[in-house]
Amino acid sequence: MLRVALVQLNSTDDPQENLPVTIDFVRKAAKGGASFVLTPEVTNCVSTSRALQHEVLQEEGEDITLAALRQEARQLKIWLLIGSLALKTDDPDGRFANRSFLISPQGDIVAWYDKIHMFDVDISASETHRESEGFRPGNRAVLGQTEFGAVGMTICYDLRFPQLHRTLARAGATILTSPAAFTPVSGAAHWHVLLRARAIENGCFVLAPAQCGQHCIRRGQRRHTYGHSLAVSPWGTVLVDGGDRPGVFLVDLDADEVEECRRRIPSISHDQLFEGPA
Image 1 (cartoon, helix red, strand yellow):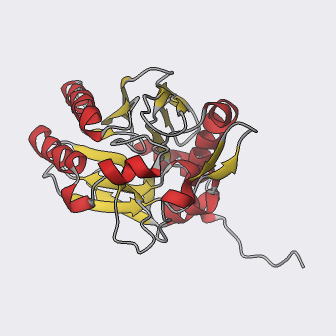
Image 2 (spheres, rainbow, N blue to C red):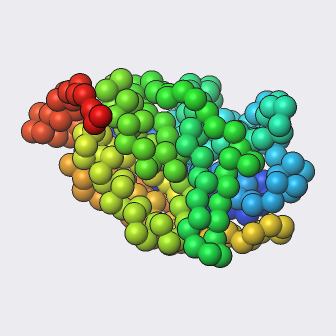
Image 3 (tube, helix red, strand yellow):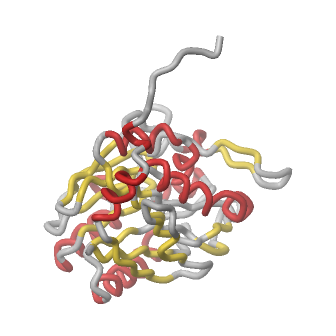
C-alpha cells in the first residue's frame, strides 16, 4: 500500500507568502504517514499580471519554493510532486515555464515536465484566459521513475487531451498526475468526469491536487479556482475528494489494482491502427 497526500492550496500572487503555508501542509501530510505528497499547479504564485510575475518569479536555479521543498522532501524522506511552479526562462520573448517537478526522498529532481497544452479559452463574456501569452508550452511527455511505479506527469489543461495520457500509460505509467488550477465553471461541469475517464481508459491511478477558492490577487484579473482535489482508482472510483477548502487529503493506494483492472478490461493493449476519415 502507498499512502498518498493531496495538498489543496489557495495560493496568492506572492511566492514569499505562499511558501510557509505550503511547507506546513507538506509536513502535516508526512506526519499523517504519506510517503508521496502532491501539491497543485502554480504552487508558488497564482497571478494574471505578467508585470507582477516578472517582478516576483525566479528562474529554476534561484526559485525559493523549489529549493525549500527539495529540502523538505529530504528531511521528511518523502516523494514529492510539486504540481507546478511558474518560473522565469531565458526565452527571447520573455515567456515563463509552467513546470512540474518530481522530487525524491533524497531531495533530488528525478523528473521535470513543462505543461504542453496552453489554456487559451473564452469561458464566458467576462472570463477569458490566454495562458500562451505568458507561458511557453513544453514539447515532451515525461515519466518519473519511483520504487512504487512510473509516474506520468501532466498539468491541468492537459487533462483534456487523452492521447497524452495514453502515451504515458503505454510507456509504463501506473500513476498519472494532474495538478490543476481549474476554473469553477469548467470544474463543476468536467473535472470529475475527465479525471475518471483518464483513469478508466488507461487503468491507472489518477492523482489531481488542486488550487481552490478566491485567490488574493494584488494586480490583474481576479482568480477563483474549483478545488476538489481528487484521487481516482484505475476502475474509476473516486477515492478522495478535497472539497472547496485548503487542506491535506490522505488516501491509500493498492498497486495491485492497476494490474487487476487491466486484466479485467485490457483496453490499453487493444489499440489498433486505422485509416481515414478521408
